[in-house]
Image (spheres, rainbow, N blue to C red):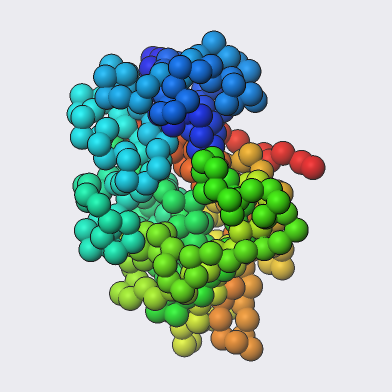
Length: 347
């Protein structure tokens, strides 16, 4: 069966990455692409790397244009998806790459986003540990999926095995992330100009203000944490794609080195797209460029009595579009890895 697809926000970075991956999906027909200010222009004008989709023209983002497809992807700024999802009740499968349907807590939404709260959808991180199983079981056959925040899923995948196994204390997590500016979207912002980010590193959303914090807390509570306290500091660095998250948490008294490493080996030993590196090895963002892969390095720091987890992902691939398509495959009963790769692009 071939599924017809509409992608909103198709002129942006997330929308473009969704289209890049879907273009090689044998079960998908990309029928419609939409935008706001760029409507009426050829897609190829805004996504010149998508040569196989040069025949498509960006249409207005309206419920009428998006309706009538088997699948709709919404790659819109936070707070804008809900107005469309409310009007697309007849669409068999909707995947929201924004934040509108990620959080289960109205209070957290009000504190970090504000505006109208929308019902939570199935969270699109298949490998995430939840209630003694994996999130993929919650994605099979669903009709509504909330793709994750790229920083949030990276940190959650980093630490969930230790939380679930009871070998780390999630009440004292510290994480620092080096992130590329594509995670902030394609709209013009002075602080994201090349002259502002080249040759420098810039922290932002410092002091517990980043919007992905409640998403991480929610995910780790699902993995078994009673209390999640996290110091979260992202740092903008001059690479177009990528996240390198360095997360630490205290070791629970009595946990042995073997038990600690076994927690991550057990969680991800059979996974295709989340891989634990051999002891003593740590990932680079270059190793996951263009891949639907999260690579994890684990260190046990007995001097500080903390576990350190270093995880690399491509924020547009595994962090956003890849997770969305992987979750789509599960919802449709297709092979989970269809149109996705573990191979990055190098150099």
